[in-house]
Image (cartoon, rainbow, N blue to C red; front, side, top):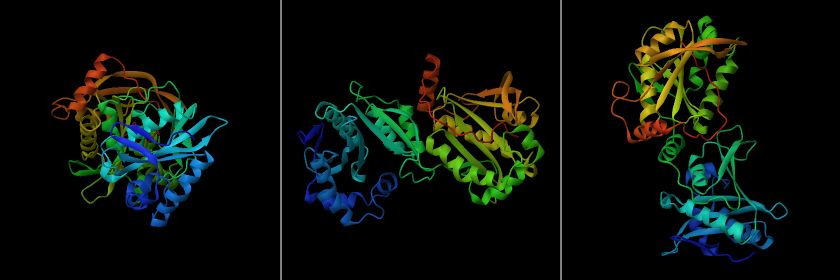
Length: 410
């Protein structure tokens, strides 16, 4: 292949050398690199030696890949890795991959290197497409791709190496002529940080909101078999143990990993499950979320749902920068309506045939809550930006597949 050194502001990308082994070994001890990339885990010194001395040179020699060491232009310090894998000459296509050493993160290293490598792929190798893939949940990699101009086009089933299970991956592409320097909004970056971390535990009056898990299964089966749960929510009927296991072990963590929203178990003072509450970010308008909740029959009327709804809305406004949270329930679900009103929602009317429920269309009540002193206290900078965007007109959203979870609840 053509020249094998690339420069970018503050960076030099060069071929790997034998004296890089120690630095690669140290960097790849990082848990995030082992979690989200395809490097072996545990990562041993022999793995670093093999990559530097055998795999990377062989790919260069065969024209099947171009692996670069990303170094500091002033000091020569190794900052990361970025390169092309699986170069397909007949299709003029390749895939980009990267990681950043822990001590170099937050400095734009991956973005600068990825932009430079993609330009080089188009100009020097005359490739016509660069692909990007990452496991669903790897929001840091997704943010780098967005800032490098990649169009994230959806999810790829049976993707390799998803630590969450289910083998789901995001996939995107970059073509010649696409801009490789893209400004990403503050809210997008903020949400990448939120959803790229662990789901928070939210305090609520007399309760705690946490991720659902296996300890909640038995109580969920009982609650979701209750006649009112079946009447007013979308839980399966009959509700079986496998449904609760699927909800807790796959749907809840996958919703968080996708950045589509959050599903919380409502736990009492003894950490016993008393209900679920979920927030779903609209696929049509990323400034809007919708809430749904379900409470176990024996826990109804004790304020758990109201406290949980207030806590989730406060988190949605302050951490996610939402401009509006909406609530819907079937007409007649007075208990759910009372909870929404106590939490500060304003009833806005009735939507005819708005809810699909067990093969029929049902009318729905709808209510909304917006940030402000009465709802959650002082508005954050992200919330103010969200309100300004909403005032200018409907926001464009990245369309992504999302999971439906028990909503319209009691």
